[in-house]
Length: 325
Image (cartoon, rainbow, N blue to C red; front, side):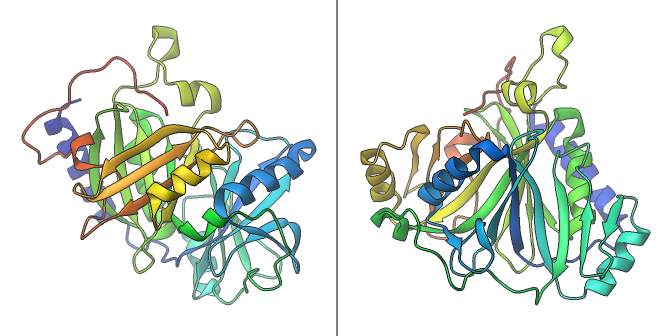
C-alpha cells in the first residue's frame, strides 16, 4: 500500500460516511466491559489496579473498578472469546432517541425491558459490542475501596483512546460501522512505519476520546502465508487502551523499578510532540496498556517520524507482515 492508495481509501470512507443520515450521538465512554475466566478474576483486578491506578468500587462491588470521573472498568466472568475488552458502554443524553435510532439501524441490538440500556452484539468487523446508557445513569467513583496503590499512579491520567485491530480488507467498513454507532468523526489515516500498519482515527466530538482502527496493509490470508500475529491469536478486537500521563519519563522509570515490563519502551520526544510506552500483553486479558504524554499542539498518536500521512511526500516502504508490539 502506498500513500496514494491510502488517500483513495480515506476519500471513499468520507464519501460513504456522508451517506449515514442519522448516526448515533454519544458522549464519553461510561464503562469498559472486560470478560475473563472466573478463575483469574482476582489477578485481573490486581493487574488492572496496578497498571491504571483504578480502585475497586465499594458501592458496586469488587468487580467494578473506578477512579475519579473516568470511565469505569466492569469485570464480568465467562468464556473469553477474544481479547478481554468485549464491550464499551457510552453515555447518551436521550436514551429514548437512542432506542428509536437502534430500531432503525442495520446493526442488531437488544433494548433492555426497562428501556434504560441498549446492547449490540459483538461486531463481525471489530470483535466488540457497543452499549448505550442514559447520561445520568450514575458513576461508581464514590466510595472506593482501598486497593493496590503506588505513588506513580498520580502520574496516570484518564483513558485517551482504545485501539481496535481489524483485518485490512475490513478496516473501511469497521470505521463506517463505528461512525454509525457513535457519531464519531473520521479524521484520516496514517501509515505507522515501525509496526507496518494503517491507523484510522475516529474522534468522539466534545470528549477528547478517540477510537483507533488499525490493520495491516494487505488482506489477512493465512493459507497463503499472509498472517498477522494478533489476528491469528485473537481475531478482530481491542489491542490496547491508551491512558494520558503527566511526567511520563518518571512514570515509566518508576513502573520499571516496580518490576512492570514494557513491550514498547519510551518512544518519541518532547520536540516531536509525544512520548509513549506500552506494557507487555497481559496473559489474563490479552490487552496492552499504553501511556502517552503530548506536548504543545500535537494531537496525534505516534511521533511524526514514525508515520506517513496520505498527503505526505513519500510512500511507506513495502513490507510482508505487520508487527505487533
